[in-house]
Image (cartoon, rainbow, N blue to C red; front, side):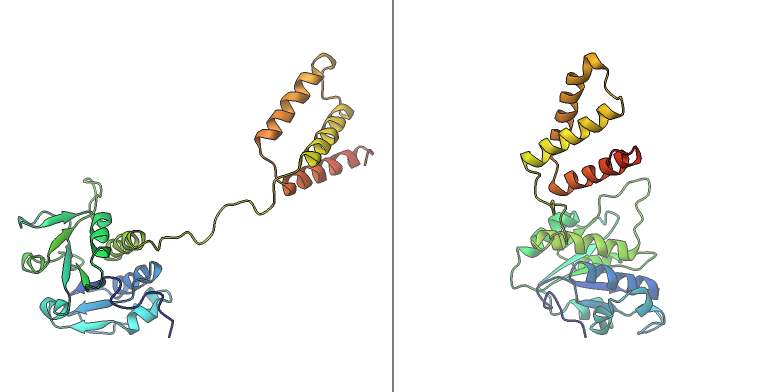
Length: 248
């Protein structure tokens, strides 16, 4: 079994109410695993559990599926929780605090030591008003009013991403920092000399404008903030070009 990055109880539980399609449950598990959520609760999944094809849809996030628990009702699924959020795409006429996913997960992270769950409704009709009434607050997403429909797993993905950011765990897996150190002045001056000599040999410079053009090209190369590897690459290209003219 895969080791868990974040122990259960630290992150919110994801609760799917009467999910119908195996693909949606599997993709939900995948979305959860992407951002470190591990606790999946299923309320009365249609046609029983486990479902054929669910593990394939999870794309390797089977540790989430293996640990999933099944409950007969929403009250049973949330009984041990201290705080519950309900996701919905429409206004329900209930006097509840309404959050976007970022605000909601910041509030979740502020509840240190409390168990929190997020309810997600059925694929076609979402949560009932009674199910929403069990929640302390509502989470909704700032989608386009021209097309507000979200797939179940997409809603979970947005929530899980917002939680990871709010919890301070959203670190990029790699950076774009330079792997080669900046070129020394000696290397740059040598490159300028080689480049200008090659351009002289190719008849590039108009005689009366040579110095101006050479200075402009030096300034251009300076703006590139070249690394040692950059200089080696350009020098290699120049050598290949001049060798073709018998100058190498």
